[in-house]
Length: 278
Image 1 (cartoon, rainbow, N blue to C red):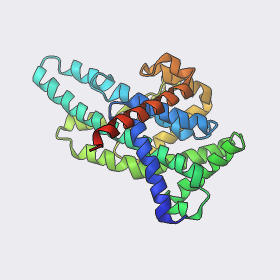
Image 2 (image 1 turned 90 degrees about the horizontal axis):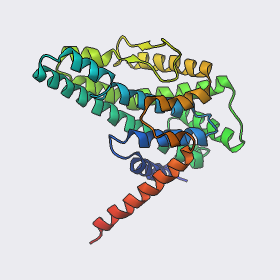
Image 3 (image 1 turned 180 degrees about the vertical axis):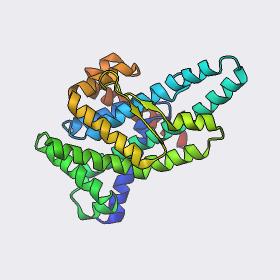
Image 4 (image 1 turned 45 degrees about the vertical axis):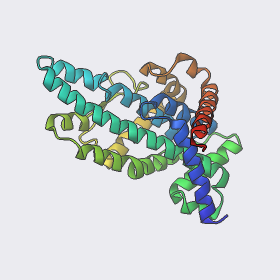
């Protein structure tokens, strides 16, 4: 196949991902998508599992009703105007975070599904970055042969996927969000988050000197991966329930939830198509 044909196939899968991912507020939908890719890969594509935790943590932290929002509400309880102003800034940053989260999910799904079918073609490297293409091809090969990747290989693949995500998708979004800040206090609070994923051992936290620094985010992501390795991947999966954003039955039937998500997306697409007819 020619590069132009392959690009059309990639864009088709990206369109499917956009439909499945829902709107900015639909983070649970994207957790379902990421979990499905993780399980479909034979639990080899650890990036998807880590991205799901990142999405759920962000929902618990940056939203106006989350940890940071409650801190701001307590700090400015005496001044309703100041409180509303700062919570408004936080909502804008949370919206930027959701937009980044949605794009990460879309890009991850499109690359995963595209490389599953076309990853072995030489022109595929014109569509997907070469290092990410190689990593995804290793995942698909392991999945087809029903093998679990060795720990060192699984980690290298995670680091490749994570670095691509941070450099190509997250960095531009974070810089755009930072540029929109017009309050020094809120800028400082949002750029110094205290991260505690639900699988972290007691009293384990990650602190940021500058959340806007791509290299620091990558380093912290690798640290979070190392913790996941130590506590065990089964616990990492099960602990997503502790955020309180996913329905309990999801954890016993995650693939069923993805099938329902696809059916819902197809139904909505069909309804939308009827409005476009003359």
